[in-house]
Length: 630
Figure 1 (cartoon, rainbow, N blue to C red):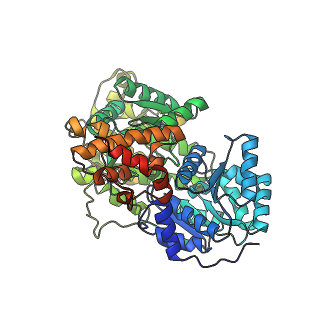
Figure 2 (figure 1 turned 135 degrees about the vertical axis):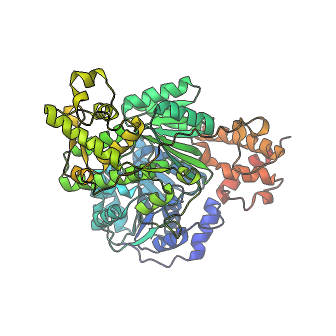
Figure 3 (figure 1 turned 120 degrees about the horizontal axis):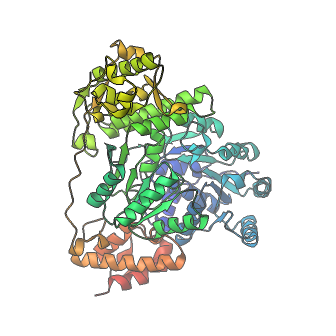
């Protein structure tokens, strides 16, 4: 049976925060969450990437272990994340371990024995292992002796069919509630709309859990969405002008596109690597390790890459293809700027993105209810892309959060706020496009794709238009005043609102729908943003002490930059020795604070954020030697 909870005080949790992790105070709702779970209650935690979710279960785990409640089990979906989390805990002086396929049978056996002896504070395992009968028997043994202190289910949105990363194995985690009553459970995720949150609570039987929903706002991220022209060239210009030498992630929809884009960027002098599920597993692991451990790497990837990536200094996340929904977009863009410093979320989208995403939904074997929900989510993302108001306000509104006191609120850190676009009424153009689709079908009984329809509306006498006699249609040339870019924007809206269907079985030809009638009759207005393609202003080249090699997260004088560069070089060596990413040893912000303070004694290092007791013991003398270099 579970030992009766003794009250774990706020002071105890605060002490662990400072002594173990080196932070002076909690952020946002962290303290309330930590105290709730430390004292045996359940919780659902929604906190944006970089908000400090890990501390919300690590501190209760340490507090409960000290109080005699045994080990905390952390359910995590990724091997790489387990390795880095456990490495970071070891650096902080916490007994932690993982059980996954990278271990030999002998290594796994040794960890299980340590677990049974009560020597481990946090154990990380994947959901597939947790629901395995042999592993459950191991948990049974701990439970019977009162040595199961906490279940923390990370990336909990994976349990929901409505989420952007549904994983069926997460459904089996209900066994934890059924088999081990009384053990506190918490589910954590960085993104979930109201529908997904409700599904998490139901699927994990957490209906009585207290919900902690932090602000979804990431004010340090600048959101920019552009129309596709030459997408790879647009991306290349964006990196050259804004992020030369920076770490970043570029998401593409297909494996082939990943490889093509990575090669193009590499040829342009960008340190770019591909990552997708079709690559050899050793190559994938090598590329991920280089991204995490080296500076200035741009990972070009499918969405197979990214969940659980803790790298704090990712300066941009770019999408060359539109994601499926806002949750996916938010989760992926949230991997930028985890350190709180300025970062970019950049996306290029076009008509083909809308067509492809619609087709994938329509061809899915799922039921019609599921398809309707997915269409609604896609429409919300398209609405964000086409919006003329504040991107951040619209993004947060999707998650039920209001930003500012008026609909006209401007965040000052998105493209629409910085360069407000003009709006035009596309209703006339929409009616002409729909009329043309209708007349093509009436005249020949055939359907055609977007390019042919737009050529007819604009009055272009192409070989294909002539071949099919479409110049004789009454709508030929009726939209000669519209540009192709404008008509593509109108078609995107018509497809998104369901007024035009795309027949993927017939070469992506366009079809009218029941919703077409309202637009044709003039009962529905189609408002669009003017195409805005002004290039980003070129940043001046960095030279001398401010060069990309030694950018610091805070203002430092010349000598401070020298100390900071020396500290980063020392940290890189330590990280290599420990086979860990450099940020696990110390974050850039901690090194910058040391460089600014220029400590001469151990006392001078006290109170620097990120310097816990164990790290002071392990590294203080080395840090003092490094900053003492002349």
